[in-house]
Image 1: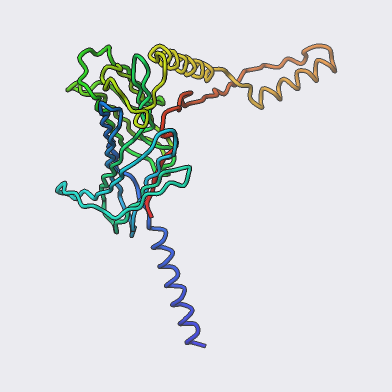
Image 2: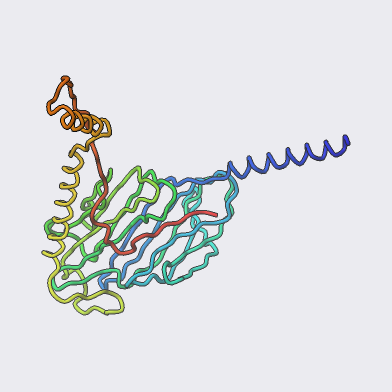
Length: 308
C-alpha cells in the first residue's frame, strides 16, 4: 500500500512539473523591420526582420502571406546573430490556395532570435497612365501577439526630386508616422504598440515616369487610364467617413435607468392624466464610441505568423 501511495505521489509531482513547463512556454515579439525595394521593372524585393523572444523551447516559426493577383517567389530565410552575421536556415514554402506560407526551422530556448525573411513580389504594383501605386499590408491581422514597434521603408525606383510628386498614407489611425526619407529615396513609416490581430498598411503613389517605359504584364498590374485623382478621392472619402464615425461616437445613448423613468412617466400619465407627484429627473448618458478605419483594401490582406 505504501509503495502504491509513493508511486501515485511521484506521478502527481511529474504531472505537475509537466503542466508548469507547458504553461511557461510562450513567445512574444520584440520588433519588426520591413524593407521594400521597387525596381524600374515594377518588381519588388522584400526583406523582413522579425525579432522573437522565446520563453521555453521552440523549433521554428512561420510567416503567412495571403494569395492574391500578385505572386510571391524566391523566398529565403536566415538567422541573424548578435554580431549581425547571417546563417541560412532550412525552410519550406507552400501555397494552399489561401496563403503562401514560409516555415523555417531553428531551435530556440529562452532566448531572443532575429530572422531575416526575403522574397520577391510580382504584380504587386498597380501602374496607371499617370502614376504607380504600391498598396500593401506591411503587418497582417493573423499575428496573435502584439508588436511593440514596426519600421517600414519603401525605396522607389528613382530619387524624389519634388515632394509633391509622391503621395503616401498609413492605415488605420494608429500611433505612428509616415513621411519621405531624409535621402529622398523613398518613404518611411513607424508604428508602435500594435495590438494582436491588428493590421497595418501603407499606400504609396509615385509618378509613372519613375518606371521603365516598357513594362511586363507578368511583373506589374497595368490599369488603363489615370489613377491619381481616383486614389485621392478614395482616401478623402475614407477620411470623411472616419470623421463621421468620430462624431457619431459623441451621440448619447439612452440607459436602462432612463428607460425605467420614461416607463414610469407614461404609466403615471395614463393613470392620472398628469405628472403628479413631482419627479425630479436627471439624465444619465453613456458615450458610445467606435474605432478603426474604413479602408483596409491593401494588397496582402490578412497575413500573420507565429512560432512552434
